[in-house]
Amino acid sequence: MHSDTREITSLNSSIESEPNWHGPRGEKLTAQLAESLRDDPFWSEFFQRSALPASSHWALHVAIFQEPFLTWVFEGRKRVESRFSHHQVAPYGELSAGDVIALKRVGGPVVGLCLATACWSYRLDSKTWSHIQDRFAALLCADSDEFWSSRKDARFATLASIDHVRSVADIDYPKSDRRGWVIERSRVAQQVMNL
Image 1 (spheres, rainbow, N blue to C red):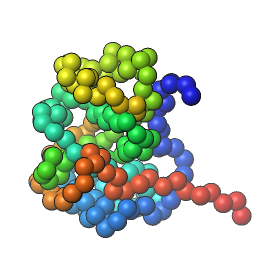
Image 2: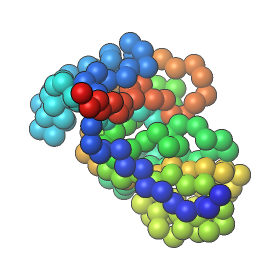
Image 3: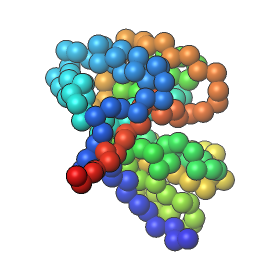
């Protein structure tokens, strides 16, 4: 298989009227985020539009962050988020432009959110590693050899340009597994029927 990059864009065409919740946690977390940001012009409008029929054009992801990366996201220094893995696991192939990413502190609560504005998924080889390092290192705040050496065995990578970063009052989000990324609400394509 070719190791070309592929931009994931799912903000296209038709959508279904009901979101595909992975469970009650996704619905509750969305409501808590919307309530926390009801006075924020961008997010208030975003969540109001999402309450309308045909609004499942976005997914809700929970990304678990270590320091100092979380602080750098809030400071605006880290403009691209990355996840590297040995297997094809979320967010690989699941994250799209327009999706919401809830920011969760390792071992702690959800403390913010942001919007994915562009997404890329890579099957890693020497060419794609070089491309990612050359194009994204500064935006990832990945200027140390340790960052890259700790990910050297990865076979897949997902990168997302992020914007509209906001902090929220702590939202409890219990989690006992080791996943660094959870999808709480999926984007669902509408089935088009010609009658």
